[in-house]
Amino acid sequence: MAARIIDGQALAKSMQAGFAARVAELRKGGTEPGLAAILVGDDPASAVYVGRKMKACAAVGIRSFAERLPSTISNTELLGRIVELNSDPHTHGILVQLPLPPHIDMARVLKTISAEKDVDGFHLYNVGGLVTGSTVFSPCTPYGVVKLLEHENIPIEGQNVVVVGASNIVGKPMGLMLMARDATVSICHAKTRDLAQYTILADILVVAAGVPNLIVSQMVKSGAVVIDVGINRLPDGRIIGDVDFEGVRTKASAITPVPGGVGPMTVAMLLENTIKSAERKLALRI
Ligand code: NAP
Image (cartoon, rainbow, N blue to C red; front, side, top):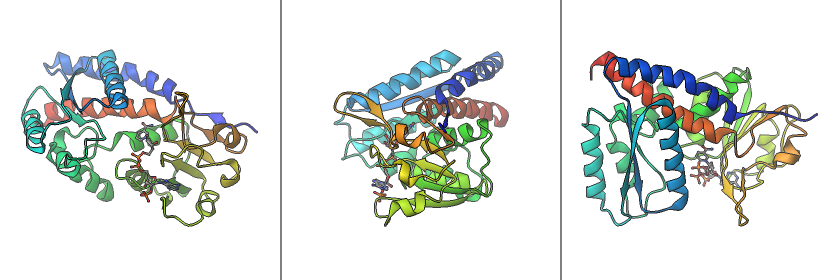
């Protein structure tokens, strides 16, 4: 049996009209949602990601602007710019594209972005909120995965979920968000002994390790739902995920492709969070 392909590109596109309608409503009330994207240095992949995010903003009427800062910028200068944006009434969302140059204190940068404008969901307040269920903004990639599962009517409650990858921006929040929906969650990482012993139990397997072909069909339970978050660029320029797509699709019941699965949903959730931030500001008059 070949798995159903979960089309994140199509779902993200279908959400555009709803986003555009919310933006139009905000504009009618005198608010133009604005997103500031800070890009430090000239990493080509980061520039591509920021470009995509800005294009997606433009498509639904969000005003976005990229702040391109040199890789030599000091911590103090970068933090100063974030503080300015925190108090700019026209900026509803601030994102700092990761990774940052090694001399930059990433934790401090993420903590400095106002939790009210933290549309990437990386601020300590928003991360802590995932534990207690009171977060303002959920991190975009795991949020996009949850939206995909919901859209595909894939039950989460009571399911065995295995998340491969335990980073602060994908794996850990993914686990917390699925726990909040009453899944039984295992989180694996590079030091997990015998990874297959966990993955084979998964009703839903989410893979975010950044290792091409880490997951092969023998590691997947028959009928499992497989969500591939990984993005790996091969020497020949092709982009692939962490899952051996061709092998696993014969075993799984549903699977996300790379590209065209989780990636477009990450961008869609950034739009959702930016619009939500502007709506909150209007409702709370903050
Ligand atoms: P990361 O910070 O490098 O974290 C990778 C995680 O995977 C770590 O927890 C690491 O374990 C674990 N890991 C590495 N090798 C492993 C192995 N052989 N077996 C089991 N676990 C292993 O990466 P990230 O930022 O979370 O991103 C993960 C992947 O998702 C990357 O390919 C990235 O490009 C992609 N990504 C995609 C999107 C999207 O929108 N589709 C968004 C963000 C990231 P340790 O903790 O033990 O080191």
